[in-house]
Amino acid sequence: MAECAVLRLENLSKRYRHDRPAIFERLELELRRGEYLAIMGESGVGKSTLLNLLAGLDQPDSGHVWLEGADLSVMDDDAKTLLRRRSVGFVFQAFHVLPYLTVEQNVALPLELLAVAEPERTLRTTQMLDAVGIAALARRYPRELSGGEVQRIAIARALVHRPRLVLADEPTGNLDPRSAAQTLALLRAQVKANAGAGILITHSRTAADTADRILVLDGQGLRPWVSAA
Image (cartoon, rainbow, N blue to C red; front, side):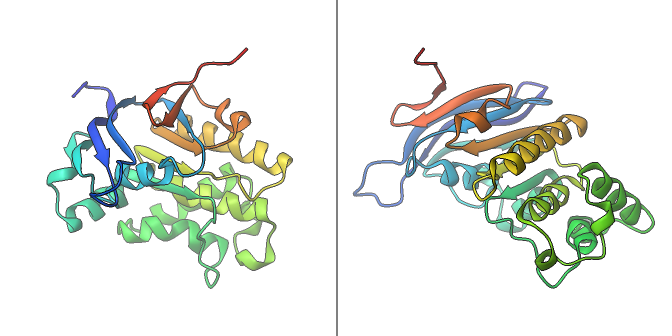
């Protein structure tokens, strides 16, 4: 694997039933440190399925996913969980914040799972809350906040442990245009600041334009986006 590659796909294929066509076949991709990539595609082409494979949440029918030099296809579930916990940050369209935890507690959760000790955990949580602009809301609960503010919790939680790979699945689908633009700018800035790599899954060209490069997932596989103009 190339020295600077955070993620590499090799001949990746997936189908849900053996009597049905593959969702995608023989995908190839390399993502380098510092790169922020957008993957576009119509509904049903397998964007979320691909994201699950990249994180080791699903198993391909053939091929390999290499994350930081580790081949997910030969790892057991416990090993993949530990790698995910350390090296991957998720931002979901549905947010998935925990309503019974405060903003601060939600953001600190990945650090607790990694057994980061105090005062380092508090320091990094406070820094991340400040970076995403919600430090003043630290003691409040998600139900008290706007959709844009809750999305900032999700971004802060995904980045607080400084993951090497950030995966964002339609992160602005539930937001108004202004909040969506702020969220996309924030996500890109934080991925770059953490010297990691990021993949944005989206059907929106506007969202995709915030990335360093755009690929399209369709029946032909993963291919560079080409303007119709």
